[in-house]
Length: 321
Ligand code: SF4
Ligand code: SF4
Image 1 (cartoon, rainbow, N blue to C red):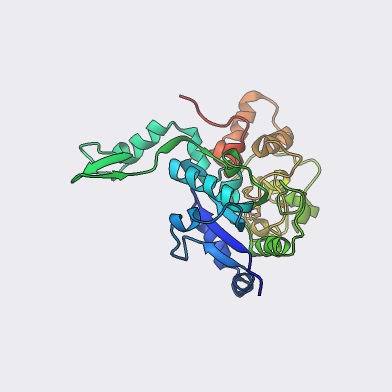
Image 2: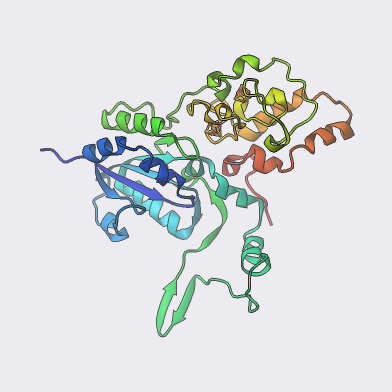
């Protein structure tokens, strides 16, 4: 019997939700386990770095890597997985565009460390001790990974072959990707494995989205009794659907919540946040600056709203010293 293809799963700066998404395949995970030989999955199995390092280059058929890259350890791992794997799939919003971890690019590394280890309410650290990358204890040297200055997407560190979008990717798109990989029916390298159309196209509320939105104010979901049928943008809620790629079957609008943009942009959009701002803000009704400011006050965290999952890919990138 021929060897089954070897598959690796790895996680970098992420919340673990992408690992949960694999478990969420439910009984389909048995089909995956039957079809492949898992050689790395730190969340579920006890493989060591040395096990992967000892494998010949290109001996792993596919490496699914989730999470953004913030530390020297993550960078080291993904370079090794790139060498060992024939195909690297960037798995989920954090790997694809920085995700939630990339929101840290709004702050300097020193400010983050100072807040976390000194100023954070509830911290009790009068000696202002911080983790060191190298510490000698009883003659032994202990090391910790270096925290880099910025959070990068996976493809800003290594070459990526395919992208699975979502926070996390849905079981449906994970299974279609796995099936395409196993059948050798993959599209062109660099493809995002999800339909290249805007989310509004698959949203059941799309027929109630007016051509002229005429936005007089923005509201947050807890401030309004949401009409379950009507387009959420038309109700003054910031729904990222027009600037977001489809493929999730409009899960959030179907559940009465605006899309927050986790599937990233379509291939025609360079900057998801800028696309949303340019397409939607031209529909703001007031024309005087102070009145426009009053409307924009309804969005208290613009970066966290328009770049919630994509600050690593934003054309502005990061805050400099
Ligand atoms: S803006 Fe949001 S609610 Fe409206 S059609 Fe698009 S995805 Fe649906
Ligand atoms: S509706 Fe938007 S935020 Fe919700 S799963 Fe789909 S792409 Fe992600």
